[in-house]
Image: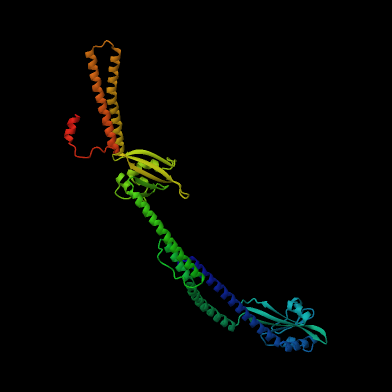
Length: 442
């Protein structure tokens, strides 16, 4: 589970989305609280407009001519009475400045709508200035304006307290939601993780285990499909194993040695006959051809650069044995350079062939000698018409002896042929006196 990359992607995505949502909600609530605080402050300023408007009318009409010079209203709110040309006539917080107020946004808006409010940033960080301007009219005629200002903190102590509580609340909620999200994702990922582990076991050759596959949801369908895949794969692998065993048994039963080599000269199969022929005590399956000294002599058959034919044959001598080696290329789409090399021990056959060749040569000589003698004596008799009878009889006797020798040689050849082909059924096998046979031969 903890190594599942997709699990952590889902979990971290949920955590990030939760953090972003919490930050947005927190900032929205903070903005709403600040807005509510400013609304309350603006409402407090508007509650002072009636009395300040009456005071501004008297100042603008001249009824309180000396009031603006002698008395100041002792309040945290600043009241400025402004004439129509923008000059200040009264300021309850200090001496009258030379600022022209006619261009202030709230004064310009009050000139049109009668009353206007505005919010300005203060030089003191963490505070702001709220202002309300009202046009002062007497008998339908504008006499001037009053400007009421108050410096307020951007956040009151109550707002700070609420925001702090909200912060702790969101922090605890974040921890709880993270834990709940982890548990939920773990719960939802449990069947996926189970299916993943099952698929991994399938890839390792474990086809016995099965998944529960309960229900009709997608996970149950997936588990059922994996169970079917495991069953079919088990049947297929079992069939392949049986075929491999049969093939191995057939190869083991061969008198010929068989060696199968892949494109990298790795030995992928060798039967017991090949092990015996090359005097190998252990099976070299999985090893490279170069690692086996006795197999190096078949390198020319296993090297695809040297042997490009589909099949080839040759004879080599190893450990006093004469071996006939034939190689055939195994054509496969995925690996066209596999070779099947068969090795046959032809030592006895080669010796027999050599003996047969020598025997034929000797037999030919044995046949040629009497024939030549007969031919010579016949020609002598034919050419000598005045030959004495005694001499002729001697020649005829010699010719008879050569004929008997020739007949004996032919009979021996026929008897040897019968023995080799198994056609000599006239004599039953029995014990032979080798000493007598040697004496007769010599």
